[in-house]
Length: 123
Image 1 (cartoon, rainbow, N blue to C red):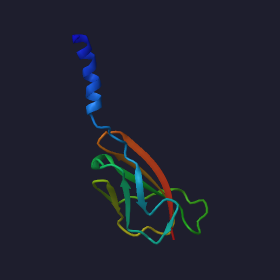
Image 2: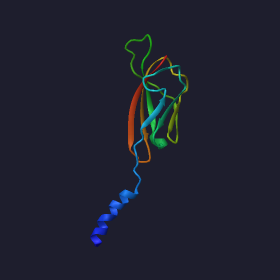
Image 3: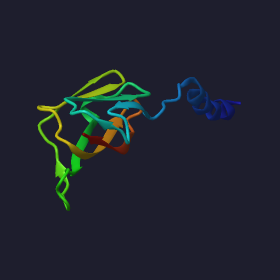
Image 4: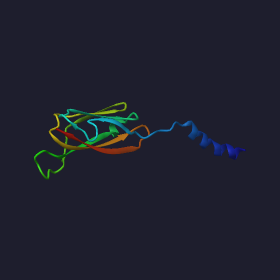
């Protein structure tokens, strides 16, 4: 009987623990595959509250009008802030016209890093 109790305890602990989900990108502004006017702020909303120091983005300009063979150019100097499920990126100046790849990484309470990527265009 004692052996059965010892084996059942870990199973009960798993049942009593709430399932922690990985964060998923629910919405973004600018949204994936859209063309927007020159933004000064980007927002990404996730399905779970984020851990601020472990969540963020990389932003790369991948094309510029009138420039064939434009080398990818990382965008720097922005500020990120996390409030609950929302990651906000404040840019130092409006993004110039061109195409962009935004790569995000998010960590929620389960401590697993989830990554994703999408593109958008500034007109």
